[in-house]
Length: 428
Ligand SMILES: *Cc1c(COP(=O)(O)O)cnc(C)c1O
Image (cartoon, rainbow, N blue to C red; front, side, top):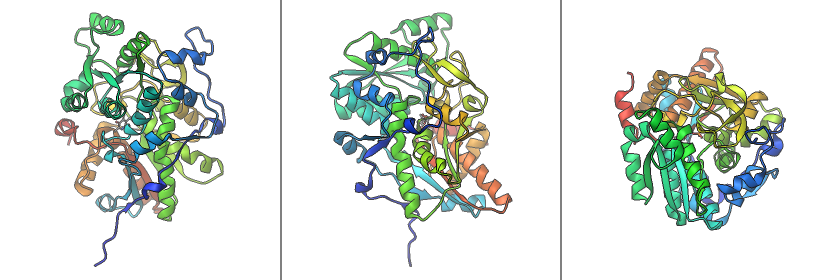
């Protein structure tokens, strides 16, 4: 018998050697970051918390950034990731469209966050930093950065949103195993944390507040920098290995995509998939780039566009983005990685200029398709990724009804093997 391979693998030496920077190709330029009084933020201001290599990328007008050798070696531990034809899912849905998923769950942390974690740890080590401070919502970012800190020899403290720490205790175990210190946020360690606890000792915490704590610590210690797992330009830059590989893999499979879909929390896995496709879109190729966001935290679909803070305590610069406001307290949904009030300025810019679209998915729909995927592909998606999966299934079913099957690609941004308590409690 012949065995059909459902996966499109790229050989190791086809790994992207450069990151793709969409900034110089945006039809309308990205507005600069602002200080609270509305002035343009001087780049030096970022130097208190970020290393020079990342600041250069944050504000770069160069199209391609070579990936440093040590980062390439780190990424090669699991990259290139396969693009997998979801035969089982197609059959379970009863559709004739071809559905592919880009499997980012095979990284050491189990999510796409390792792509930027390795790069960020490298640039901080190179700049002589000894420690990193960061926040984590669902725990994936803290896990990814703890592994990267271990890989490049840095100490790390992680402020983990309290509600997520309660929901996902095993994430803390992994971070501790890597040598990281993990604190529940809000904590007594920072001014921002103490203020939040004084206002409400039982607060579940939020990503915005945990960011305040980590930024406050990094700004106050010369040996410590801050690391952010999403939103910022340099983070999206590092994630473009995803989209660049998908472009090559679709070409190998002789496929032209109709839909490219990723979930949206702060915008990094979506931006990493979408931005490398922007040149083709601008050249007139016909396909849709769609962000899937949770109905409980609908930043792109109902937020307002303007300058807003990235954190609750208003310590970050103001960024031009869609936002629900820094005080927005998202409900404690299980897709913790999607509970962020803001959005990446790059993704916001693309949405505003009509190059991409966004739709919401509620948690019942996300879990419905997560269950179908688990039972047909035997892969348990992260609750975040299930939003991309659900939107993909929705579009595949729409295409079927219109009698126009197509090609749909979504990013499986992570696996859900540490989210089983969420599956246990999810609606049937
Ligand atoms: C963090 C996370 C997300 C959301 O973050 P983005 O920056 O929007 O990509 C999505 N999926 C997984 C598995 C995550 O860990």
